[in-house]
Image (cartoon, rainbow, N blue to C red; front, top):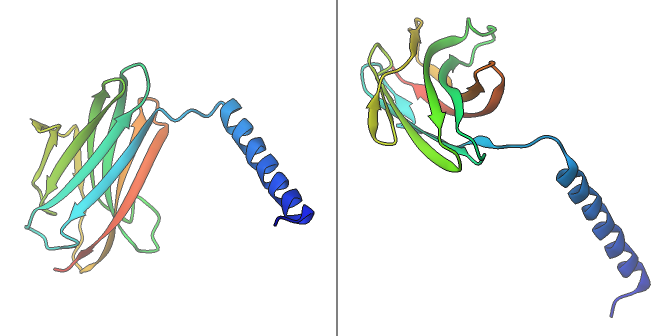
Amino acid sequence: MYSLRQIGQDIRKVTRGLKVLGWYLTSKDHCEVGLGLLSAAPSAVRKGQSSRYVIKIANAGRQPLVCRLTLQISTLTTGEPPAARYAQLTRSLTMPPRMGSAVVIDYDWIDRACCSIDGVSSSLDEFWRGYLDIPQLCAVTALLHDLDGQQLDGLTVYQELTG
């Protein structure tokens, strides 16, 4: 049996939920593109051995979207970026409407980087690499920007550089 107090609590919860739903439905903040996955293999890397990064991007909008995908590898030091940045790989993309794409980047942590988009080989627009000589934990971040430089989404995973 429900008491009047329990029914009152349930009504307040439903009312709060309806307010949040109403705010969400009237919000001007629309999410039409996003990163659905960032995977890095292996979790422990060594310079000269290839690491594979898989990034899945979805465009839920009704129009094609031109954007830039950046894979940024940074050390977890106290330095401010770009001082902590070790490598940056960038590729421009045109995302078809209401579709997703898989971008695969193979990087050997020295000077070789290969990219493919939905299984088709493609070159990187930019590839920058700094110097890193000691084993440490690194943050690998996928960033998605529009052409104005506005960040649309980002995901981070961590890899251990072992030597």
